Amino acid sequence: MKEKIEALRLQIEEAMQNASTGRALYELKMRFQTELKGIMSGMKDLPKEERPAFGKIVNECKQAMEEKFAEQEVVVRQKEMEQKYASERIDISMPGKSRKQGALHPITLVKNELISIFSGMGFTVFEGPEIETDYYNFTALNTPKDHPARDMQDTFYLAENLLLRTQTSAGQIRVMEKQKPPIKILSPGRVFRSDDDATHSPMFHQMEGLVVDKGITLCDLQGMLAEFARKVFTSSTKVRLRPSYFPFTEPSVEVDLSCTECGGKGCRLCKGTGWIEVLGAGMVNRHVLENCGVDPDEYSGFAFGMGIERIAMLKYGINNIKTLFENDTRFLEQFEN
Ligand code: PHE
Image 1 (cartoon, rainbow, N blue to C red):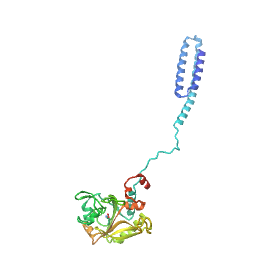
Image 2: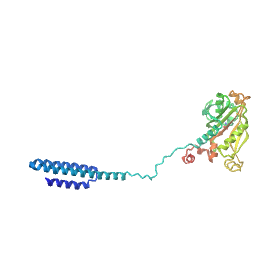
Image 3: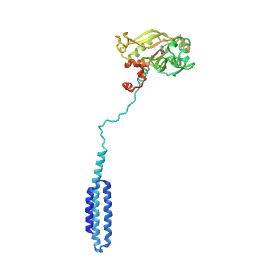
Image 4: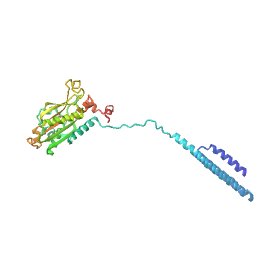
């Protein structure tokens, strides 16, 4: 019996050296306990006086083995952890998966910049509808049905009197009808025209400005535009007003800026003139004021309207307006801010 126990102990101890996982060690422990039980069941066949000595041996063996198993368990667990860490090791120097982030479109960037400049001068934003009535887009702006100026702004008609607005000037009427002077508003938004070449698109964006108060003159318009030009472009950008014609302003002016490319010396962009045309403006025609219930003998005002694409193209040196609408990310990425 004693030998049997000794043999079992040696056998299990040897097997323990090879049990390299927690599971193998557990199974070995179970085997040892079962076999030990088997040996112990032979105890009843021993003479009574030998039993206590035998029991002592069994208990000692059991205790010794339990200690051995506990020690081995610590060793195996340690080894298993090391293996687990090694297999799950993360290379923190590896480049991460970069996720593309969106950015504001250049038209939005310029629109926001314009709004911020003019808000600094006290303007607030009013946004009119893209589908306008013939009245707001033309008639109230002193452009009746038979007026030749309508030709230049042919558009998409949705019904006899409903059209896609051709100019944000329609917003002037909507504001003046509702608000008493003093008025100082900006009206940005999409407009539509039958126009299509490298610098014109059937859909583009405009930013309208309207100021109505007592004693407003063309000088106020000029001063404000000079400030706008310096802020959007450079501190040395100059403004020039040229006589022009719009049915809803009198006098009307075309506003040029000193060339943003050559600074006025003359280059290909300004076709050697040193000046670039950027917007239309003028003093609000008295008929327009009357149409909106504003007394032209008491109040005067100026209005201006600029193409946001045009400003963006000059600011960023873009030569084809279409690139602004193609959504080619290689183009748009250049404006990430
Ligand atoms: N609405 C005019 C255009 O689209 C621009 C303009 C606005 C002119 C306001 C004068 C005053 O061409």
